[in-house]
Amino acid sequence: MSEQTKSYSLWQLVLYFLKLGTVGFGGPVALVGYMFRDLVEKRGWISESDYKDGLALSQLAPGPLAAQLGFYLGYVHYGILGATLVGLAFVLPSFLMVVALGWAYTVYGGLTWMQAVFYAVGASVIGIIAFSAYKLTSKTIGKDWLLWAIFVVVALYTVITESEEVLIFLGAGILYWLVKAPPKGFKWGNMGVAGLTAEPVKNVVAGLQAADSGTLWNLFTFFTKAGAFVFGSGLAIVPFLFSGVVKDYQWLNDHQFLDAVAVAMITPGPVVITTGFIGYLVAGFPGASLAAIATFLPAYVLTIIPAPFFKKYGKRPGINAFVTGVTAAATGAIVGAVLVLGKRSIVDITTALLALVTLILLWKSKKVSEPVMILAAAIIGLVVYPLTH
Image (tube, helix red, strand yellow):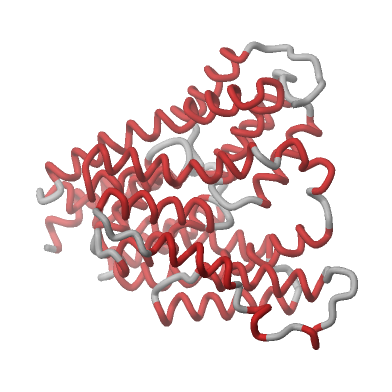
């Protein structure tokens, strides 16, 4: 924990994150910005150095960026109790919202008006994901030829297979680490096949995939894997979820999955709360609870355990190189997911125009937020869908 004098109570911090989880729209980048503005600049509760350490650790570890930073900031002065209460306060409001929306979707999903809403919202979501992919690409890839190679290979793999492979992400990180910041004494000639198979990781993944003892257990193991192995933030989890939820387990169809992503867009808090909505559609409230817990638990553990040691070791070149490689792979997967999901949601001129207009508005204007565009698309859908179907 930080030695800086506490100028606030744990209750004040919990209330702040409860409010942020209730009204904090805009995705992980916006939420992280709100935390800096409110807790560092305005209130002075968190020092800038502690904030930067938390942000760096959150970017290094897999899982949802904004939630991880919240865990860390709660830990700074109030340890594990602070991290736990802050995490619950931040995630709970959006979780309750997606459960309510899941109930409404289950009850009314067959009605024309809800089909009309998601017909347009799904197209708008494609525009949002496309813009996110553009921003991530321009920010993370740069002019590095190796990062571009990783990006292109993973994007093509995602498009061709319509799935995402954990080992490719880990392999990308290891490759970039060995090329850019290899350990002392490392020689490529000494790398046998066994060194590249990542057998321990394969065993972990296989163990998680082998759980066939029931839907709830499968939900828990799948979303634990999602939280433990997906690097990046927010929409980076979308291609991974699509691969498992739609293709492997077939819990949802293509359109239901896009509707789940749309629900995450119109609710505040972490974007990955879409896992709660998916869990509800699969197995009701128990499914929603298990999916949400499983998604956030790895991020919580992987933030709290290394927190005391991060200042000492976190800036080592090898670690940064590994994360850079993984991030390039995650960005490629998002670009591939845009194409895969776009084929399913852009079905006519109206949906194509909605996706294009959403992309242009995000590109040209910083004043229009994603939730506003989603709600506008819903209204358009209510008007247009009855005329075209």
